[in-house]
Amino acid sequence: MKSKNIYLLIILIFLFFAFGEVQILYAYSEIPVENGGELTGTITFNGKPPVNQLSKVVLNPEYCGNTVYEETYSVNPQNQGLENVVISIEGIEKGKKANDLPVVLEIMKCHFAPHVIAGMVGNSYEVRNMDPILHNYHTRLDGKTILNMAMPPQGANIKKPLSQVGIIDASCDAHTFMKGAIFVAPNPYFAVTDKDGNYRISDIPPGKYRVKIWHEKLPSQEKEVDIPAQKKVNLSLEISSK
Image (cartoon, rainbow, N blue to C red; front, side, top):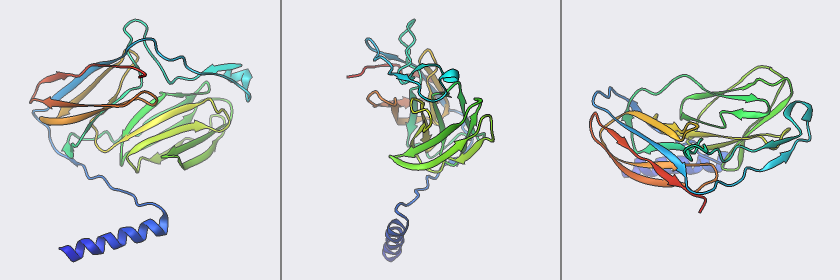
């Protein structure tokens, strides 16, 4: 057994030096979840939210507008609900069936819509240019380019696999104010908050878990939760810029 582990380590070291990185595979098994629990809540912003950056449009101002606000901080003034926060449950290796439909990111009026999407590793995502102008879709993972492709006006869609867990940063090289994010999780237990800051994750196997709360610019948080069988657990919290 020891010699087998050493042999595997040698192979991994060889792959690292030969190709610069080693793709880590995350095993997840789909099983029936008959007594699953549910995690719900609302994520709110504490205090006055930061101001989104205003950018001057250089290319295609006749379509995009002369100036465009970034969409980093989307706070509902009615309840301080924070949109585009990803809630993910870590450590679940067996559970509900993953959604096998691709997650969709549309380019509309020089914006990524939704601003943040989430999917499970092993699934795929599709990018659609709905605009009558050229965009240059560029994605990076840990600062490293994974895709850089021109998208003609209302041209063919791009469909790519979500092959690695992490945060994919999306941008447009033609319109540098365009920013978005793709959260790739190791299991299907995640959700993105809506415009009111609400989220819901269902069919969770009973147990104790660590929950990660992620926003593209605000400090991430982690919480411990206990999910009883067939019970609904509320995890609501405030996030601030400090």
